[in-house]
Image (cartoon, rainbow, N blue to C red; front, side, top):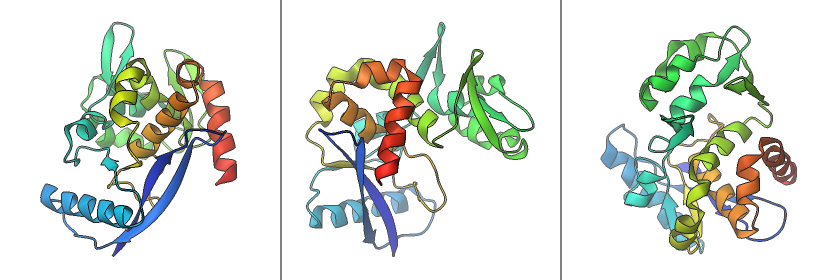
Length: 219
């Protein structure tokens, strides 16, 4: 058995998401078929609890939109280049012993995550893009903000296609071992959209960070 979260947008109030955890039968293994069995198991458990429409946000999603919204599929516009979101995130890290390693911007998402410097340069102290420094607190704020920056100009499309969803899952996200979740980032985006604060939050990191901090203080 395993327990995984579903992230639920909050369409009014100051909180940016809710989280509900569900237990289900876990199918071990790295095969895509095993991953999708786990997605189905999580979604069935959520449905039995009243969350009938949950979209998996990852490359393991059975829905094309879920795969398109994966962090491995998104691009971040930087100058005149479109950089894979995951590569931008990893390459912007500044550690106690080095960084940012902006050559990672030119790597694939998988190559970016596996770059040895990410593991051997010490603790993250902040993030940096083109000389601008971004705080690393709360720990997930920069990742969520970059995710939202990739998508906020498509707000109308997202609203049309996702407003009926009860929540979002990310089967690879284990809160006991991981910090970032693309499903949580999307739930936050949808909450900001519902209250009319998406564009200003995507364009102002400190504003976004303050909203995230208030949400985590209530969890």
